[in-house]
Length: 198
Image (cartoon, rainbow, N blue to C red):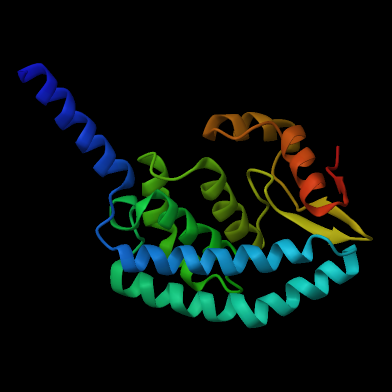
C-alpha cells in the first residue's frame, strides 16, 4: 500500500508539473492570441507569392501590432511566462505570437529570460531558434539556425545565415532536424519553391 501511495504521489506531481497552471485566464488568453495569429497566417499560405506578402502585411497591422502591445503588457506584469504559470502550451503560444512582433523592443527585453528557459529545457528548440534568428536578422546580423526565409521572385529564400557548412551541426546541437527536413516542411506549408544557397 505504501509503495502504491508513493507511485500515486509521483504521478500526481508529474501531472501537476506538466499540465498544471497557476494562471488559467492568462493561459487561455495566450492560446486565443495564438489561434487568431495562426488561423490568419494559414489563410495566407494558400495564395500565390505576391498575394501572400500582401496578406501577411495586412495581418501585421490588424493582428501583430495589437498582439505585441498586449504581450508587452503581459511581460511587464508577469515577466516571461513560465510553463508552471501558463502551461507549456501557453508558454509556446507566447513564443509564437512574439515571433510575429513587428518591432524588437520586447524581444530584447525577453532575451535573457527566454535564453534561461531554453537552457533549463523549458522551451522547444524550434521556438528558441525562431526567436534567436528573428532577433539577429532584425538587428542586421546573420541568423544561426536557418529558420528565417524571405519572399523573393515567387520563392522562399533562406535569409542570410552564418557558416552554411556548419548549419546542420548547429541545428542538431540544440535539437533541430537537418535543414533538408525543414525545407520539405516549408514547401508543404507555403506551396512555394524553397531556396537554400550552397
